Length: 259
Image 1 (cartoon, rainbow, N blue to C red):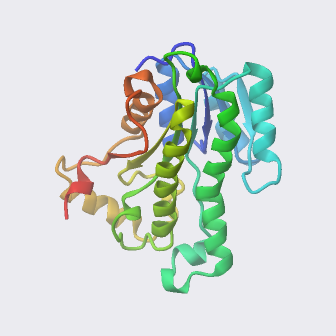
Image 2 (image 1 turned 120 degrees about the vertical axis):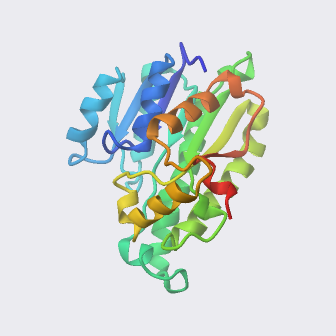
């Protein structure tokens, strides 16, 4: 779980309750040097103090819907570091009307927007990270690409709606990317946390009821924390997980094993 000397990019911190922040904090505590992004000027005052507390060398704007925005982030990383060891993607979005409606009724525009922001942005991140993750080709050191999924990708979760197929697509991309990037010694993983009260999750209808149900029915009879997710992300980014790729790792107090 040692990330000393490693450099990583974290996408998706919105505030101190974000899963991405839990991951960034754990990675920093393991010795990593970080680059952190924020969505826009409105988000910057919430993210920059957290990034500065983590000692992030780079704090950069990134709206993945803006043409060239992702490329600009990676240009800054290449200029500052010349390489990259890991990148964590914790970004998802669906227009509220489609998120709260039936999957059968999903609009074309809403479905495409959800796929673009939640899935294709991960592919774009990986494509730009690949040429910077070269150290693993010549040494006992692999690159790692991580993203966040949810159990609704595998089973029907009430009120998760269009995000179920979206996360299923994300998990499939993880497997295909792991196969493609394995020869470059780049590992690809999805982490599937249980329900956590983040700002993004608040948009899911009846989310409080979902959390209470998981708390009652999971084998450990509890919810998980962003710190616990962060420790798993740190493990997957480290050489302790060098023999693993293409996985979906559940961090949910066992909720995913219960029918």
